Length: 595
Ligand code: ADP
Image 1 (cartoon, protein in one colour):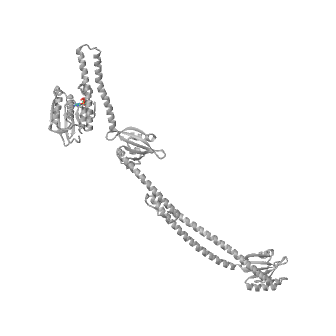
Image 2 (cartoon, helix red, strand yellow):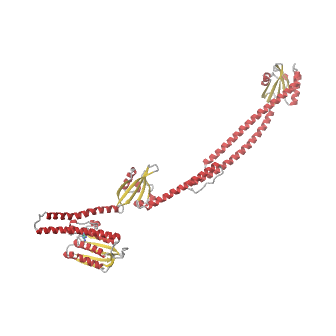
Image 3 (cartoon, helix red, strand yellow):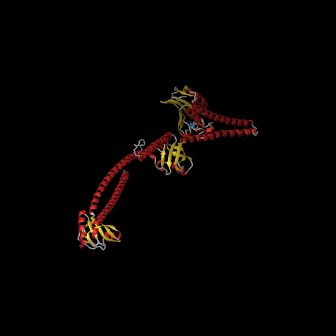
């Protein structure tokens, strides 16, 4: 504001100075010219008077008659209000309108007299001691042959011209002052008008600066300001368009980032968070707005992640790594980085994307383990079979009884292989059916399933004199695939019998809760140590490998139970204590959902 004022006032002041300067110059020049003109006029007038006077006085000059000349001087002076003086070439005054010539000193030293004697006429202005005022003198020589006969001098007081000049000076001053005032007024008016228009433009521009880009400046009528206003309006329009593009692009980007399951964070070169999406904020248990601008160590508590970010900031190439974090247990995060570049391809930070790959990595490990386990399970009997067959083939065994024993062992290994392969096939079938929801569900009484399963396991139980007790509500019915559920119950009963001492009891029970049907198999056998429980249902997982193999186990029985339960939308769990026994429970949802 003050600057704009300063500009307007400066303009105004310069106008004022120019106007005053011009007026003063013009005034001074006209006064000077006028003074010169008047002086010339007076000089000419005095010359004429002197010449006229010369006509009267000439007859008395040769020889000079002082009395006659002085008398003419007195009367002519009185008539024409002019002082005449007649001076002889030697400076002697012989007549004067005011004084007695005899009392007057020699006038040869007067500049006008000397000038007239030298060049015919001369003009002089000076303060007269006699008259006590400035006087203008004009002296002319009265020629005779080659020499001047006398010098006639006419003089009037300068005050007359001065009075005239003062009057004119006053008039010029008044007119000048009037012009100056008018000029100042007009200048002030124009300046203020400009100031107002500039003010309007300035206020409009300030509104643009505050983000009111829809505002439009009024177009002033003066050329340059109108151009300026139009340019500003155009600029605001373009800015508005660009802002809208930027905002909509940012919204799109934010929508994309918000809906991403992957966590995304952007970090600047000073290791501060530029932005992060909701998925990332969830990982750091915070809100995006709270941590924006914070330093990485402040915002992210995980050391491995911090170190990765530091490495990523130093690298110009994308990087990838798996890191382990502890958040609701151990989680594996796959983390990738890509450098953030500005318009000139200069790095300004890094973009980090990470997601939870715990499940994926677990599955990968399981698959690897599974392949290794299957190979191992198959290789062991195959090696044995190969050894016995080769021995028999070489004919080293001549004893027919021994040969039969060998063949019996081979047959046992073949059976084992067959069991492993059958169990694997069953597992993959159940998985398949479960995934494709192709179970052959039908409403079945659990009693029937239990009876069939008990029948299958009876021989083994009898062998160890183990009692199988049926308990709970056997009349319960469930919509299940009866063949699969029977298989699951058989596997659990089989294990219970296998891992129990002789002459104990195994209890098979069914129970119904609000939303589940539970089938449990309880034994009082060897039990399972706590540390094995989490992995018990994995394929080929055994607590005691040798014991399991010796009993003809494949390590797949519980995995089959788990998959049958899952295919029905349920689950299986175990409660066990070492040397006390175990209880395996299958939980099946009452409402089976879409089959
Ligand atoms: P296996 O064919 O070896 O029995 P399973 O998958 O059926 O394989 O069982 C896995 C392991 O769990 C077994 O090797 C055994 O160590 C343990 N197990 C299963 N059932 C019981 C049980 N009722 N009591 C004690 N241990 C059990």
